[in-house]
Length: 440
Image 1 (cartoon, rainbow, N blue to C red):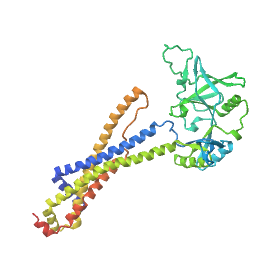
Image 2 (image 1 turned 90 degrees about the vertical axis):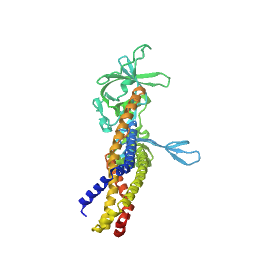
Image 3 (image 1 turned 45 degrees about the vertical axis):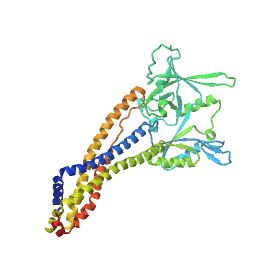
Image 4 (image 1 turned 135 degrees about the vertical axis):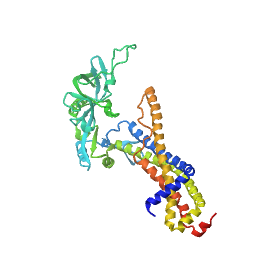
């Protein structure tokens, strides 16, 4: 039997029993749509979880801090914290930076150093506060940061501020009934950085620097939003003034460094190597990896729940095909009498079972996709209203249907139908023609 004749006969047989085929396919529709909706929900939850994480903006960065070997009370050694005394400290010295640069996959090492004194940022009559940081790069773009205004390049006497810095200003002479302060536009302005320290006699000593703001960073939901960046050599000089002594980097090292990897795939391995060297390394990639692992398990669980409904539908397909054999026994005998082989008969019944699975799967994909879209509209509108009332970031979507899911669900439903028709098709193919023709 030719393939086109087989397909034509399968669709003809299915069309003769529209009601029964439709009722059987409904079970497949429910199971397939459940798979699509539940897996889409798991994918959407994973995407929202990663989007809502603060500071997850550059998956090639590794933050490295000095390592602490802790001596436990029991005499054993503990690394990185916990109870006990500090036995040894692994400082981020220039030699340590050379070790990091020698690790395969590392593109560069960026030094960060915090200002260790008190800082008062003055703009006109307004005063502000912030974290002040020195960076060893000439351009913050090397750290993956972007400017919403101005530039990311650092030169002496200038600074680049985070997106939230202008919210940190206040008027010390403001009255209780004054209207809320409008955040000032700092771009291009020259601010006074008043740095201070305390002498041994308890006297406060201040210095004032005029610093021009040459750039405002885009919001990253990370550390950069609340930081002011300047050149490392300037911050190091200010720290030496605060301490009253020259800093020996070979002994004290730096506050922390950022190690940049060639690709996110190499980050976890590089982080492990740095930790093995005795330092404390952290990367957002490990957090994202843990989230992805959790939601992958969730996808499997949700998909399994939908698959159970498909298996129940498969029983319905098997029952429908078994009943079809009883009704068409004489027809099967007649087909065999005029030359149809066991393979031909089996192909027809398998094709009908797969056809029911395909029809139900197609309906389930369409219905599941539509249900996911409706769920998105309802949930996003609800959470948007909640975010506007209580603050926070609104959700972009609740359910997200990946491109492979509809195709997978359709093929899975068709295969389920095919498998459920195996026994009835085998039974039909093994009927004896003479006995089938005599069947009433």
